[in-house]
Length: 230
Length: 69
Length: 274
Image (tube, rainbow over all chains, first blue to last red; front, side, top):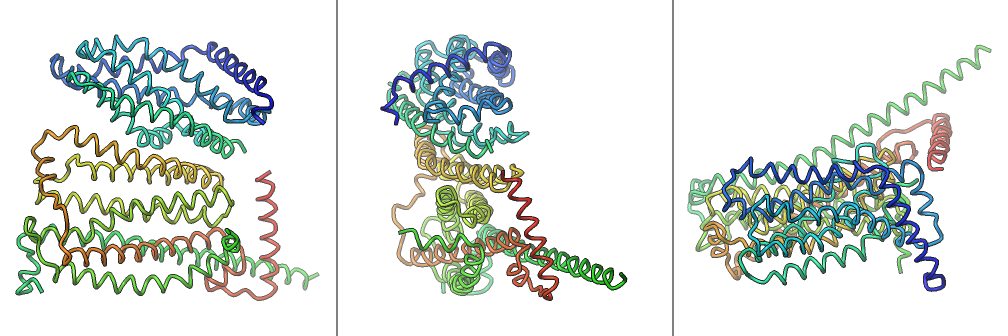
């Protein structure tokens, strides 16, 4: 079926992406707040553990990644919440294209809107945490490869909890344990770069994890949405 | 048998408290699970009997009404 | 191929089967528990490095193993619930999750107690302990999601999906945690742990261990079946057969009334589903 109307599938995909970006651009604070939260959390750590540059440099990869995980939890809900409330989600499930395609569009837009800003301010975070310069590139790469995992795996959690009134805390309870491998690989890569060792191994693993999530998550998201929209 | 006396068995070569407390904790957990199931079953039976009594009461009242008319 | 599964979509059929199975698991289970207790505590030889303290292994290893195994079982029930839409499989998730969580808790608890004399601390970020802790979080997540929904069937389906996602992720979590652990082997404690690890286990210890593993499996299955039966009865409490199981006999007129009531409930349920 997909091959029969390949052109139209892609067209719908493009339309969905455009629409989502337009909707999101109307409520910019939703996008800005997690970003500010991320910067504030990273600022809190030097205040909590002391400003010694050696200790900050050592915990920087972990701090930046944990903060990124937490701040992504804040913004995740808007992936499906508004569409669920105004009924657009039901429409999406009824579109004549595979639901997985529309889900991928949603994930892509969410990544563009939440992860790109993080990638842009990553140097600032590295600077704040006194991360050694040779690891900056690796940190950026881990975020670049890891944030799609956050969006894709996050979509599963949101799809399951979107119909609940108080899904927020539950969402973190469901998702954070599943994202532990990402945290481990990412911090390992950055630590390797700090130590002057090649971070290629963990980076490749993050890449594999990303491919796995992007290919499999849409199916789970579809099943989850079917449960929630009823 | 690895132990010469009850004393030695209880003491477990100085590790008695660790060994016995972990076994006791395990049994406690399983016991609580089993008790919870049994208690739950009793509660269900109580609920069901209440519901049955209610059904019978309604029928009796209805019959009484019919007789009066 | 899967035809044999279909009759068990009927709760009565599953109830009758589990009711029949419980004694067949319970009796050998209790016997094996006693055997493994006596064998493991009194007859197995002491470890040449850890002395008598290693006897914790006879509860620690079985619980850790079956904590993982029951999660897989729960995910399989999730697949059955999603694919064949069998209600009893949904109830089975609700029955397995607490038992699995308790098994995980036992393995963590006994691990901590074992760690105190051996490593000098209750908790170390050892790979197995950490992976087990994450498994406990996964169990808690499934249970929390199940009860968060007002409509129980929706909750069951959501929990099934989560269990399946979790089961795909478990090997990744496991290997990542092991890898993380070898990366961070700086403390003397962790090094002591790796040194203490015996590469192989003597057969005089292995046999009682195997018996205890089997014993814990049987006892846990009995607990799951008991919970499953309760859940089925709770779901079916308006049906005559469930009332009969609960020891309540209705006279014929009350039965008729109950049936009418049940029909009302079903109609209402049907309206809700629409």
